[in-house]
Length: 291
Ligand code: SIN
Image 1 (cartoon, helix red, strand yellow):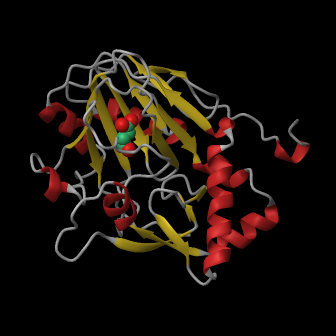
Image 2 (tube, rainbow, N blue to C red):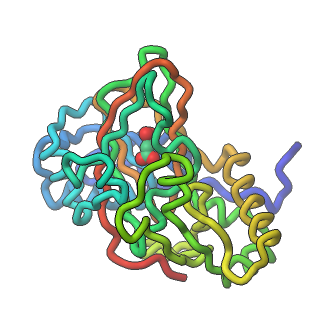
């Protein structure tokens, strides 16, 4: 199989030098490692602006060799928004601003082991997440894949993009939190909200394909067979198009900061019976996803 001409898009020519640090890219369009920042120290305004610029450019930023306590992790998150409390917090206990991501030989599942965007069931989903991994599997593995959802949209045909542009879908927290994780819902149930199938990133104004296998239950106005066929086609596009992805290989003390408004991710559980441990903070979005 060869790409057809219309399938080819020029690789982005994204910057690798910012005022206060440089980055090395994981792929031409998604994922970059940032060198020369100690996240345990408060960031200057210039550094924070550079991180924001690089994050918008590269969508996924990887910071190696960080030594962070929880307060430092949360302080870094707060530079980009107020901190989010996960809908399953009532089942976890502990610090409401920290989501523990822990997998051992006894775990019935590993969080995020499937393509998804974090908590799109919320009315205003988290704009970004920062996962700080301190224990990686002794066997290797435990990588996280990230997909560029701008490119996912742009690689669709023009008629398909036009069709999707007018649609809305339902995102339901019960799908992962009850269906996959078997948790007991809080009073009032898990969040369930509608978002456009194609949204515009609020900062870049670029269009993003905004449905995900983790949370999207159906497309409003289509019958069940149509909705299922359409969503399965889009999910297949995401999970069978490697050029959309970058792969973050964790080392102990790596922090990865991703933009939830234009990416999906998939935590690969390939390391049973070994263990992996990290803590995540997410920042609350400032606007509802919109066209
Ligand atoms: C998640 O935030 O979905 C978990 C990601 C990971 O464990 O790599």
